[in-house]
Image 1 (cartoon, helix red, strand yellow):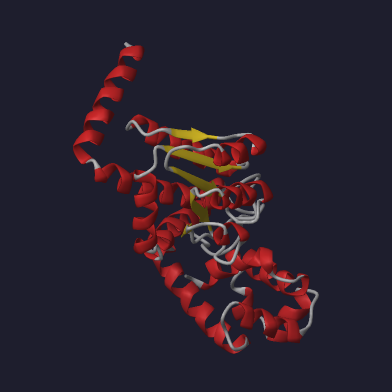
Image 2 (cartoon, rainbow, N blue to C red):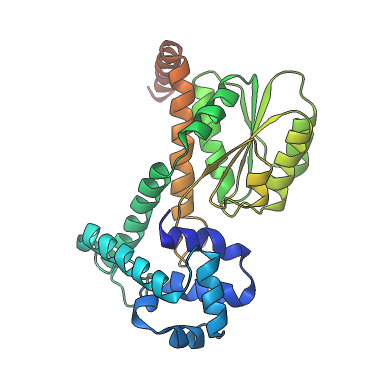
Length: 285
């Protein structure tokens, strides 16, 4: 995982003093290169000791190792995305539309690349086994995560799988309790802390239902409630009304999961896709 993705994933679980350091770096990663530890502490309205604790919380022994590693990471990314302008900085009021779109596109491309690069294929195979062996697939998420759940349900339904997106939290929990055939429950949450989604997986697991989590936070309650946890690697822009980069990363995992399930019955999948394509085309004619 990249340093910036590590900070993004850890930010919501850090104590306030360390979270302020994370926020300063997320807003402008080059602040670590440009400022001394004292200057960063002052800018974050915290202490030097808190900056050191932050470094240790994300896997570094101190500020100097973080500074060197982040400088290397930013240098590589600047070279990779040199044509996209000021990559690595937040979208600002001074940006042209082209510059703002380029920054967002670079973050989304990185999210896809890093998510796939860090994907645990053993866990993915186990999740595919669970979905392929289920007679009923229950999907749940809140907000933008619900859109991702709907995307997977749509894909699965098009190949004849019994998939249900549950929009009401009470209905979702009830559905996990009332099962008489093999069932899998899939919960979506970027931070992995959405109470309703966590409860959905916890209840499902307690009632013998196989559980899958799609999240970015490895130590989150959602990941802990899952038999199989699939993780995104994301650096979300603060200039957003809802999930943007994190949604793209979740959709990447959804597509990986779908392709894996579809390949298990390749001929059947191709036939189902052809038949449903022809049926929907008839509606347009």
